[in-house]
View 1: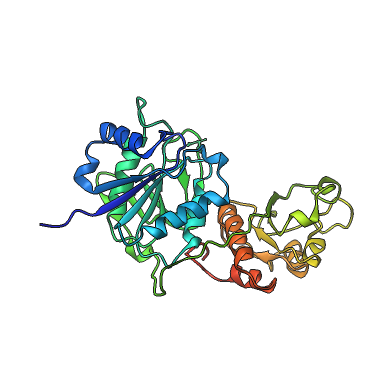
View 2: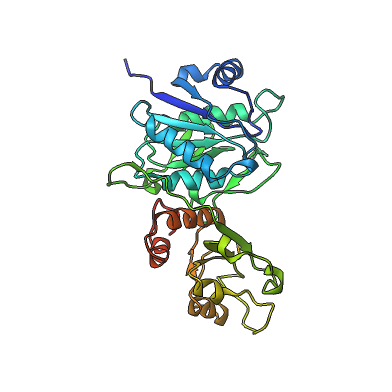
Length: 326
Ligand code: ASP
């Protein structure tokens, strides 16, 4: 007889269901989704129960160490999570769980598990079914799509297909059949290890016409260790001199790296394309390529946490840690 795979189901809160403890959650799930037992042997952990908009980097570290500690005990992991910051947590887990060999699948829902017309039931069944496959990645399974976690973005507040992956194709689709695309998955060779270092002092700004000196007055420079700037288009910054120009070189001169993400959903930063991009590169900005802002913000926190010297941050962004950039 084929051994049923074992899954650690980790509940963290969100719309899916903020049931207070592991036992309550297991009971709720057993009642609402009894067929899960046919798929896998399920154990439950409940490290916290939060609306995901209240989560901070310390929660990512808690989740990553919980998964790392139990890595040898389970075949796969499913994390139920609020949708608001799921893409950040997925990015964080993909970096912190370095050289991951097992599936870590995040899911959630637009409506709570115990409500009528809930999408939580289908998403949970799909996530568990994906977590018992050979998928050595952190993925988001939601609304019938299996997306690389650090490529995904929250897309819709109402559609049951709430996440999209603008710059990387889906790892799989779950419809009448589960279809996975192994040729798109990561190939791992190094040793699995937990890399919990994170420096949360990252400021995420979106450039708007006129965002510059006066709008940033009062910002305590010491409180910022890195900036992610969503520039215009392919990474352009304004060229006219004056107070209302983002003080990129001033941050860089202070040893604060500035990472630029593209100003459109689809496509990549290309500093060479326009004078505004060449200016950004000249002033010392680091390109995030085709990374999402979520993946770039968390990578900057991790890169700052790991860096021994400022140049290490630029080098980290040129590297591909977990398939987050092309
Ligand atoms: N505010 C909720 C959360 O992110 C939304 C959801 O779960 O869909 O926790």
